[in-house]
Image (cartoon, rainbow, N blue to C red; front, side):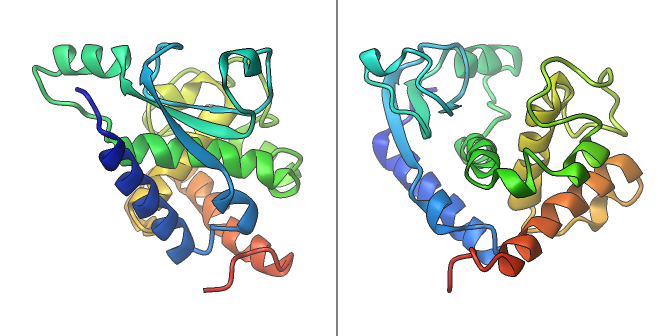
Length: 196
């Protein structure tokens, strides 16, 4: 339930390595800072702060990921799952790097016509596009809005090392996975992927 700084640092490095292996790590993305905070202040496993939102006064830096060492969301999850946590710290970091990716590369995600086609609405749309359905969303949280749908899909794409064949029987999700896979090619076309 309580994370250590070492655990978070190790998970961040593992996720950066995964992103690099998949051709999704860029200089902009690698410069996103990941901070820990002693206790959860927003009620989640972690979050990516895109803009100031007046939180700089509390020490939060825009364009940064925050991971609480003690999270009420993790406590609840352990209680509901009889002591087992179903969300790994790596999954949280993968998810938050997805939001960072969308902010750092808006032309291929946030402002992308293809994104709107695949995810059903622009990235910044508030609210659900469709109700949760397991053939259309990788998780219930993905049905919240297009940005969370993207982040949850991205998280699983990275977790499974780009192997998306497992989703062929779920065509809507498979199409979303193919969109994520295409991002590495778009980065290469724009010559902004990191050189290995």
